[in-house]
Length: 420
Length: 164
Image (cartoon, rainbow over all chains, first blue to last red; front, side, top):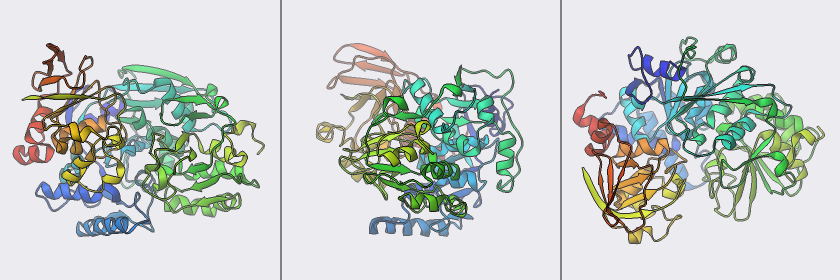
């Protein structure tokens, strides 16, 4: 069995599962957040229940609406806080201790290798970075899981991406992620599948990069993305994991519906063109294009490692006068670490605005949204029309390194040609 | 379970923002969701839609966010079933969980305005105008049972167990 099949078998009390099978599995943690959380609890009450299956395994996070920009959001947050407190939830990451839910789930050790965690936001696939099955679900699924500690799944077919070669300077996991997007397209081949990443280039990847890679598997249409736990995972989880866990990996004779090999040596900085995620080009094709907004943050690229590479590029430089840059650390923990390491100082000195950890403009409903005519160079995860606000804005997606180098010149710039 | 209605045909990659824009999703109130369903894609959709009509789409229907309001808005507006070449997975499971039937039909010649008869149990779509039948990927029985119960909440209340 593959790692995902093993996890689904283990948590549905079976020795073996096969793709296509429907199973009810035990859920390790259920995440819900401010934006959909009250609705999730409302669904729970519709089941006729007033308590959750385990107060320490329902994780509540304020991320989409904090700090509230409108009285309506402030009111929603108040209602959300009321319901979380009424249920006496153990882990409530509210404004002041907040972060983007997926970052919180991994960084605070609520996701363990070999288990299944779900969340009411599409990028819950991020949890696969530590070798868990991370899955996005709706509020009804979440409510049922909160009530019972279980969810139904169709066991997915496994597709493997074997990543070889050496990472080139200034090339990040985001570039690989976009490269795979361009390689596979939205042709339906990956819908409902589990994407497993392995190989020497994955072994070298830090946890931040693994999170980026697994995070964007949802945008490939996959059910989940997963990287088997290894020494990097063990070190990352040491002192964080809220619970015991064991190493788990795919069997040598596991069946894959398809295996793709990618030599990362040949992957350079990569850009998705406005409106369509799979409209992906190597950066050379778009160098010199002008933009006026730069955005780095989100559950895809708002981690310390992302801010570190930006600080390296922007050290002693000035962001172009025609570019407004907003940087949003993915959590308060990330914010504090970037502050202590001096990255935030470097970024502010270069002319970037640092915003409070939240989903910010990524979903088009919070601070820093795009207006008519804006051209945004973003290190986020989606670029559909209207995603960040106005339908009349264009969004390019790329890595934090590309955003940083480009912001200095005011036009899309290959960080490999940039004088650091 | 046979569903009859007229087809409203749209294209590929219709995302959840186009099904129900994020700004309207602060609620699970079905009537206000229904009022704005598909409004950015087709402002006249609501005016043409008759209760029981069938939405037909291409690839990757419902991609994007995990918002359950997307299938809920379609159901509340009166859509009886969504037929697509294939669905984005979160939309697919949300639709089942709230009791909106979804059927994957890999190939069809359905045009807007065609009268359709969908048989969920058999997994067929009959185009009355063109007198042709299309075969769908069949949903497992438990999924049909959840849809027939009106969604997962009602299903669990009635069945009280998790056998699949």
